Image (tube, rainbow, N blue to C red; front, top):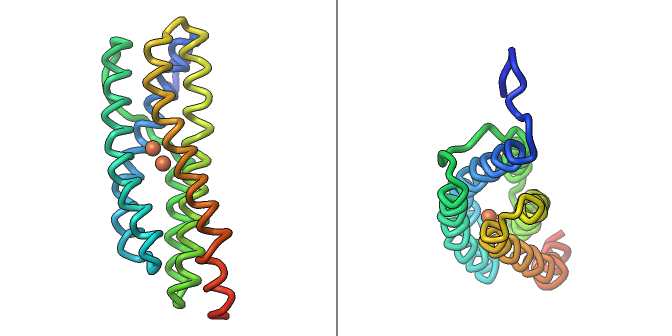
Length: 170
Ligand SMILES: [Fe+2]
Ligand SMILES: [Fe+2]
């Protein structure tokens, strides 16, 4: 963001800025997921993280498509929000020893990430439509739907076996 001038003047600028924010976030998530896959104890959870790593790679490809469709340079801008969510997750996970408690911690961290993505894509879809870019909105909606589905899957796991096992371990 400009120090001497204001770089975001129009709704279009704001749309592009937010695309770059989520592009940075998705790239950060791709780097964080392999460690979460490794740390997950429950095979279903491990599998869910692996599946979402594949989806996340697709999210990046779809964002690149949207940048191209909109005729702007493909690049990210710093997103301190996702940096903070991931740093906090690393701190908490680093304090956990019991594998079942670890799974509960991983699910909670992953859901914080999903909710961040959901809020960003929800906004981007609405703004794309407002700007008359229904083509971009359709592509962004695919990412939004996969984030929501992942969040729902994680909720089902949190409410199901994983937390039960953590309680039994305690
Ligand atoms: Fe994503
Ligand atoms: Fe996601």
